[in-house]
Length: 358
Image (tube, rainbow, N blue to C red; front, side, top):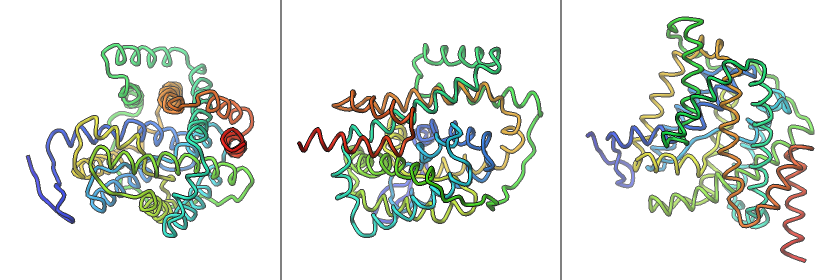
């Protein structure tokens, strides 16, 4: 076991538990990244390289196994066809600017007080429903491979590994793709973005919905979880600042909008991570995947991808229902499915405020 100290004296460990802990943060990252690459103009090697770099950067900066995840609301909307790639990228940049301003001015705590937990959970439910709908549409197009992916899911869940079921199905998809294209050849990612920015009302609406999730889950909840699990003093405003900087640096180079998240922290911890060593291990693994991913993602079966999206939706939906007002969360979620996430967020804030203030 290799171990060292750095920064404020926190350990940097590379034990087996740190390696398995690294897997805990990849459970939703890899399925979402592969789906975005398969259904948009963004390149998977560059997406993975973005996650690789910032796993290492924030691991070393904070000295703890902090997470780096996709901005799931934006990712779900572009996967569902609600956002174009240009709107997706623009929303990530706008979100980066707003998070940087909120974090550096210490305003995030004041904003969070006006966004109730059921509202954040409702946005999560809306995103889950959008992902599930897209996944089902992709799955019905090729029922044979879909049923194979469902069978793999059932076996993994029956064995007691529900949280890793999406990774198992993802592995199946890459195996099927490998039969089509053979052993992939290594290729260095070309870091650039030819995507044209798109400033639209849909982009603004999507940014509002994502910020609701980011404020509640990626900043406030993550800060609390880091304190509870790792005795780390990282404020929501610090996390907002790092998320803002990350997106302003990475998105223009072709990476997808990224954030921190309590789910990734919980996943790392549950799988054994206790130090930033897990971040460094995961960063190296993402970088290696970026070098070998090009041909495989091009051949990835979309029907299997549909099952992956449904599994991600189930996990996100479970998180969305973990609230003291599930009725409001579900109402916001269904309204978001029928209209859009931004409108549902605004309506949810209004409903929550009326319920609690009047």
